[in-house]
Amino acid sequence: MTSPTSSRSVSSGSLPSRPGTPHAEGKKETLIRAACASRDLDALVHLATSTHGLVSDSLRRTAWPLLLGCSEEHSADQAPWEKLPEHRDEHQVGLDVARAFVYYPRNESEKQLDRRKEELSDVIVEVLRRHPVLCYFQGYHDIVQVLLLVLGAQEAPAAAARLSLLRIRDFMLSSLEPALSQLELLRPILRAADPILYDHLPEGNASFALAGTITMFAHNIQDYNDIARLFDFFLARHAVMPVYLFAAVVLSRREELLEIDKEDEDIMYAVLGRLPQPFDVEFHLARTVELYDHFPPAILHSWEWWKISSSSVLKTSATTHDLHRLTLKDGERYFAQQEIDLERQKALKRALDRAKYAKKYIEVRLWYYRRYGAVGLAIVVGAYALWLGRNGGFSSGRYPLIGRLGDFLKRALSAAV
Figure 1 (cartoon, rainbow, N blue to C red):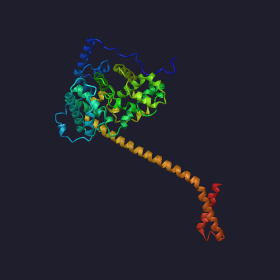
Figure 2: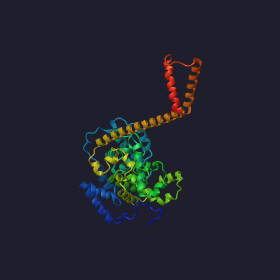
Figure 3: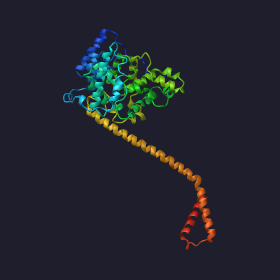
Figure 4: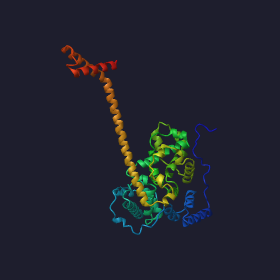
């Protein structure tokens, strides 16, 4: 029998073992090259998920574009991006790019880093100008920075465009609401995996996970090899995996979190917002896979999953096979539909707010009439009696209107009694 505080979260017992030998790594490299050459997506997904992922950047340069479904079919007839209209968010891009390449690459001169920043700015601006519907968000540069370092300045724009429109589109809409909706999936995942820990966590929104999930952890991870490994996993697996990884991280800190007083929400949020150090990538990825296998979104039967737009990346382009059947135009079409959904949600919220105001107004008026209605009726009755006294009674034939008023007052008084 388990103790009252034992966890129902996925175990670490099935963690894959590390290859550990040049022979094992060499064999995996051969398998990756073969999967890329034959465009075997299932094999490539398996290899990207298993320990050490796609092994090296030289292999990633072939594998990542394949996982994203990149194609050169329309690149020849595209106008130079420099001649396209400026995007509204380019000023913010410049501010963020100036802060890029803080942790990696290491041992590069200031001049080399400045050149990389120029290339990073060019990649981001090209994507935004070619797809002006996209809205830049702070942290996007962290994602594109990784693509640039792995793929180079020539190949990164195509990969960034497909990633933007088909995998992280929910974060590039005109509102952050779709991104927050993804974060809300943390609750049903944690509730299903570990009810005791779930009940101990703060009840507010999961904003502590925002920076990690919307940047595919590129904002949080400081080691280049670790973030490249994570991208192997995220590009190969379901688009919801950053949320599941964050859930796995929370579950791995179970004992630490349970020791914090439930009322100390500030401390709890501070701990939840930081990754454990050192961060064992393979350990947490293995837990993420097990967590997803045990509790995929579809079986959670949660309101949080149901309310996510049917045009979300989580429901339209969640897997590599989905990506390969979709074009950038499809991504823009889904983008437009999500914007329509957002406007509907805003209109519904305004209608609900008006309904709440009307309900409150009616309640206040009803209270007013209950409080003062009897007084008003007494005044009317008093005035009526005074009039009768002064006029010595009345004949309904002479004063037909007053007669009706008398009948009304009789009925009102009898109803009040």
